[in-house]
Image (cartoon, rainbow, N blue to C red; front, side):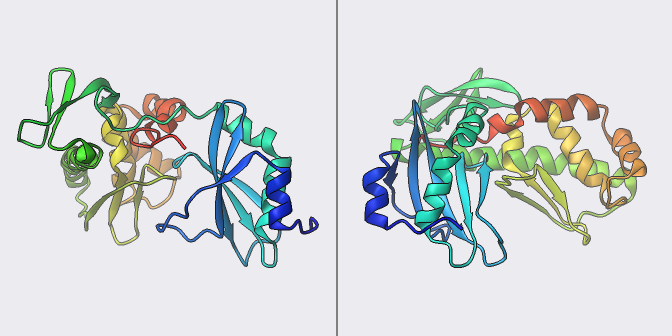
Length: 262
């Protein structure tokens, strides 16, 4: 265990960090922004009584580093550990595209095709697509929320239609579909037949959406990843290998849309 460094002393010696406000959506012990050359990343310190040592985790979905602290390990020790491993952090940041906030003029993918966000504050009608643009009406401060809500509705429409068609071909029943911002998985299927999908799939090509839906629907019959499961998935979609490759190469970038730089 690393020696304890007083909080005031640590801040004076390490200009890499600056404090930011705690996020009420989580319960970290502390948060800081780590600056590495031209990149800034949020570092979150969280306690875990089950942890036996300090652990660094890269949360690519939120574009942040999580430092897991065992019992009786201080935040100051966690900070020191993060600094000693800033090379590891930098390597991960190099793989992470810059955040792309939802704002007028930005480009985002919709069904795999790039669209420019166009703000029309003087019009009504909410959000809609128009040629290669996504039109968002209303006040500027609500643009991001309105656009995200619209993308979630579009994701539900696209996913639910495909899921029910595929489930019918298997003679299986879906006991509910949830659309959420899944950060670790694109989809899931519970033993009770409830499916869950990330709304960010609406930004992927149609073939990729079809594959993820087929993958989870196949779990209604085969709740595993054995040979029978993969044969069944291939029967439900023609896009297995190409879509898996696309997600491995481009999936992480979908998590950057709608996020703001640190």
